[in-house]
Each structure stands twice: as structure tokens, then as C-alpha cells.
Image (cartoon, rainbow, N blue to C red; front, side):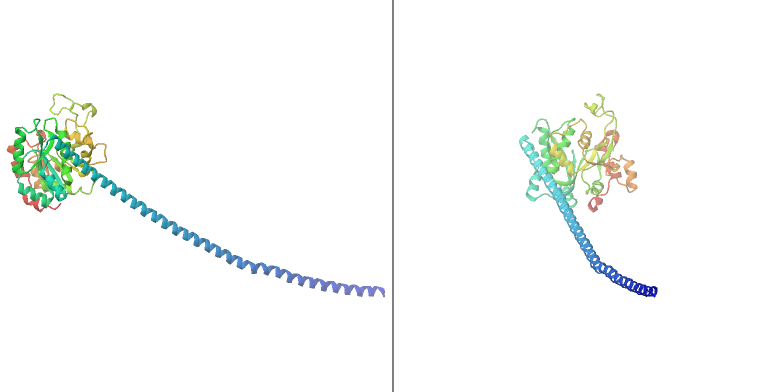
Length: 383
């Protein structure tokens, strides 16, 4: 009896235990599911908030990049404006220096009693015109009417360059003055003529020419060289956009160290065994920048015996473009004649062995007949 009662109570107890376990399990499920769902509910807004912040940061970075680019572009524009302003200022200063040098040249001419060209006075009153080139020749005659037409229509100035004798105002000077009054084609320099003074004459010529005329190029040519002006103008016009041009027939050769030779160089030891490349002296051209440089520095530029060597020495250390053009040093017929027949007209012709046309007075007309361009070529040429 007692065992059964005890067994019945145990069964009841076991049932209660099972019920309690089931209830605890259910409560545990409810509690656990609540714990799982709460983080999910809070996590979604956290993720959205995080994405929103990332978007804001990205937008700020994008705006910063745009602002940075705007600043960079603005800085670039400012730098370009500054660069252009500096270039304009440099050009203005260079022009002022040129005008100052021109004034000094004229003042020196007045002080030394040298004649001052009437053309300078005319150019001062009417304003300076831009020319293609100024050609300086030592001695010759030409038509004043044609010369003025060349200046007005083609922008080409041609003058016969000469200084004065050691005795200023002597017979020779008076003869030149009379010839100048008749033809109006001379460019009188404040320079004493002399066999070994060509370097000084060249320096004075460029300084005076750049003061008188505003041109793209300044040409020096000997009076015993045949020149085709239209061809020369076409050659030079192709170099107008280039700064600091020095063109001619570039040459080199043994330094003249022998005292017995014609163009002996007393300072030969400075050059070594060979001269540096330089334009031969019969004809060469330089741009306005270089003529201005000579004008501004004429008092400190060293003169050697040979003027072509002197000119090359003045430019050797500068940022200068040397242009070797063999059309500026053709031989006399048959050389220049064959080239003209082939359509490659020479700008200048002379005999190398004579450093010009041999027996110039007798032969220059024959050279022109065979190698010269027609007069029509000059007036129809476009530069």
C-alpha cells in the first residue's frame, strides 16, 4: 500500500517537473527571441545612419575636390596672367632701352659734330613705321624715286653706309655731303673710316640703324656683292617669327696668325687653331633683338680685326639661332646662272677668291644679266 502511494506521488511529481521544464523552455524561447529582435530593430537605423554619414563624407570630399580644382584653375590663370605681364614688361623695357640707346647715339653724333640724318627727324615727327629689313651698303648710286617706292610699298630700306675721314669736314667729307644731297641714299655714321676699322663701323652701323628704323632685320652687305633684293626679302620673311636670328653663310677656318697675311689677327691666341662658326662678311643679317643688343652694349663689345669674326664673337655666348643659308653666298657665273635656270635664284653672288666680285666695276653688270632677278620680281614679291 505504501509503495503504490509513494509511486503515485512520484508520477505526479514527474508530471510537474515536465510541465515546469516545458514552461521554462517556452519562456526561454520568448526571452531569447526578444533579445534577437531588439538588436535587429536598432541595427537597421544604425546602418542607414552609417550610410548617410558615408554619403555626406563623400559629398564633402567631392565638394572639396571641386573647390580644389577651382583653386588650381584660378592659380593657373593667375600664373599665366603674371607670365604674360612679365613678358609685356620685358618687351616694354627693351623698347625703352632701344629708345634710350638711340637718344645716346644721336647725342654723341651732335657732340662729335657728325651729320644727323633728316630721316630721323621725319620719323620722330610722323611716328616709326615697321619695315621688313634695312640694307646697309658701303658705296654706290641709286634712284631716289625707286628707293622711296621700295620703302613705302615693300618696307625695304636701302642706304649706302659711310663714316667720315680722319679730318672731319675735309674735301672727302664735303664730296660725300654733296653726293648725299643729290641722291639722298647715304647713311652717315659717327665713325672714322679706316682699313682696320670695319668692326667699329659694323657696330656703329647696327646701333645707328636700329635707332633710325624699326625693322625686323638689319642687313650688312659689301659694295662688291651682287644682291637680288626680292629673293633676300623672301628668305628673311620666313624667319620673322623667330627671335634672335643671325643668318648668313656660316664658315670656319684656320686662324690668321701669320703677320704677313692680309687679315692678320693680333689676338689669334684667343681662338686656338680655328675660328668658331660665323657668317662670312660679304652679307649677313641679324634680327632686331640682336641689333638692339649691339646698340645697348656697343661700348663693351670687343673688336677684332675681322668684322665678321667680331660679330660672331658678340653672339657666341648668347641664345642666338645661327642659320646657315648657302643662297647668301653663291659664286659668280656659271654657279649663280645655273641655279637661277633651275629656279633656285641666289640672294647674293660673289667670287670667294676676291672676297667679292673680281673687278667689280667691269663685271657686276654681267653678273646681274645672268643671275639677277627681273625688276618685276621685286615689285610683285609678297613678304
